[in-house]
Length: 339
Image (cartoon, rainbow, N blue to C red; front, side, top):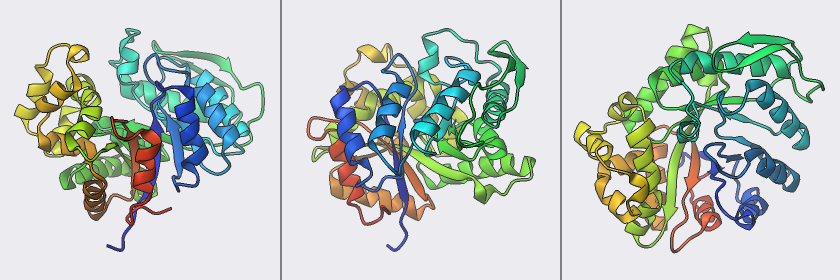
């Protein structure tokens, strides 16, 4: 197979600091394009960890994947991202989304999500370009706000994360790129995502091919495939039960009965991962994951590249055999991964 794809990764900041630093200190030599840090839930502070990553690297992009307009006012996000951009000498990238399960704990009303995100992104762009911004919504307010310093770049790349039809169309309309949320890893899922991006791009006179599309995939490598799937089982169950767009999952080929089985689970936080895994059909699991031994994983990556995917954003889950760095090392060795 001659076609290759690029890779970036998202680190979920709930591990010991040294584990993160081990990844940071190796990520550039492994050939990854970007290192993103999840800014969701009550985890370790993303901007603190991103600052560490900026100080210890030289060429990779760095930023949140994803932050949101609810737990962080867009004015603070603009100032934080401009600061990170300066610390990294122009390498900051902003992933922006609904907030996922990280917003649940705070009780925000997300009934006007698309408008909130559109206005927040507009405010961030205007602030980093030096404008004074007034924007008043129920979700956030800015009153004659202006950054009190000059950013080193007027524009920081913004990627919208999501999988629902409206979110993907918003990405096509206003964003530099998109993190296409887990659950779309099938030919019909790729087709659906590209169509929604194109609808948004065409609505604002943009060329859809200019939108940088990155497919999120949950990865875990182990000689025992069940153990590798166990590692991602809670996250997949949580997304399917609470947050994933049913329109998107069905467009990717998920069956109603498979989705409903997960939605009928009780408190998933109290169910062992091995039990959660048995509730997820193999077909649904494949829409989210690359898991198994290295040979299985390479074959799956090649299948995804053949579907037309040009960039995979890996979300690694450690297991009994391999930690996060070892999983990233495994993927970097695949012939179908460009570096």
